[in-house]
Image 1 (cartoon, rainbow, N blue to C red):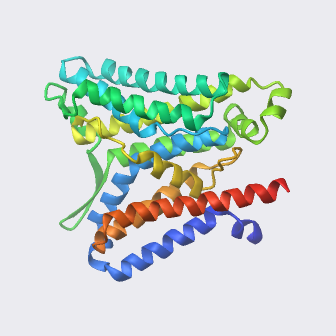
Image 2 (image 1 turned 60 degrees about the vertical axis):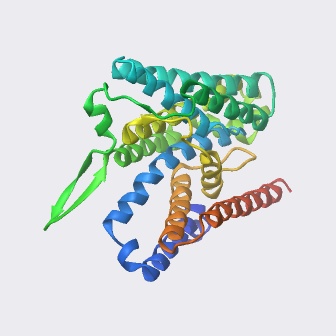
Length: 324
């Protein structure tokens, strides 16, 4: 039991996160250990959690999705434009979902059916979705003052309690993210139709011989990924009260880094939602540390890239050892 726990990726990630928290708490106790700072970190990482879960899903089936940030932007822009023009909230949100699912379906179809490398397909989708979003908005913000006030408020609505004069509130966007992620994590770990994605990722040939509909399963992974991207787009659009073509820039790098750090493999067949969440938390703490310590933001980006390279190297070594 103990040896199994110690060999767990999640166990070590928890320890690393605790070490970073203790270090930042010692260096900047007043600013880092404040509830306002914790709330800001957790709120900002909500979007990255959803995108990293989307990335983890396609990595499990030996896929890759570099378009998550761009599809988020396109979905947000479409929803914001419809809301601006007076369309009801729910049809506008469904239009954003349709856009995200269309992008996911095209990605899945070209990767699974046409056999094109997922890197090339999703790189093209990344450029196309970002380009469409920019053309639709001419690079400007899209506000929607005519939309119902509840939509512009629900993501930032806080639930919490008072201790003295201090209100400890948790934003709805964080609660929604945690709720959706928890439910999906449980389903992914226990529900047979989703468990089949792991079998497909481990050995596509064996999965096909066993009677699995591998093409449908592979495309479904990209559609599930698109749903999580859409949820992130809805929350971001509501929280910021605008749609914007520049949403999600570099989000694919953070999502990929968090997923691989959390245990997902580029070779497919592995990944966990808890590990992905811990990976996002680690990157968020690193980013927060740079802000509190007045670090150069360029070094923050370089650090995330270095962490990704190390995680990919460890994953490649693990895969090589498993095959030999």
